Amino acid sequence: MPKITKGEGGTAELSIYSDSQPLDLDFIKATEKLSIAFPKMKSSFFVLLSEYIKKAGFTKKRIEDAVDHVCMNFAYKELNISDVIRFDRRIKLYTHSEVHKLTGEVPHPDFEKRIIDGKHYFVKKSDIL
Image (tube, rainbow, N blue to C red; front, side, top):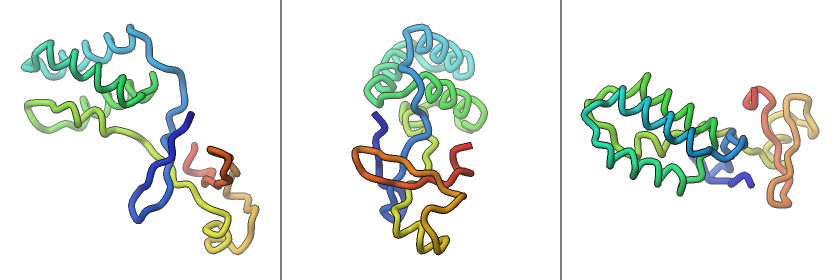
């Protein structure tokens, strides 16, 4: 079930990740890749990281993207759990009135309607590509 969170300025946001739950093999691949990229980290760190990834409800694709992001962008010697956990790609959810204020019309061809937790929202089609 997608979880709506508050973004900057109190706007509603939704993670783009809605694929399947990770398997044990996905955690193994992720921790192996990170242990190669960060050889000074202890194996106990990766056990704890896997535990926090599970608690955060990561999907298979989000784990893969988070690990790739950290490997390509991390500039320090030691990795922190939060460097992986905080990774997410989110899209803004717009209300009916927000779409109307932006475009002057609802529905608008640049927006797609979504029903989340029984509430109606709109997302920019360009954000979900």
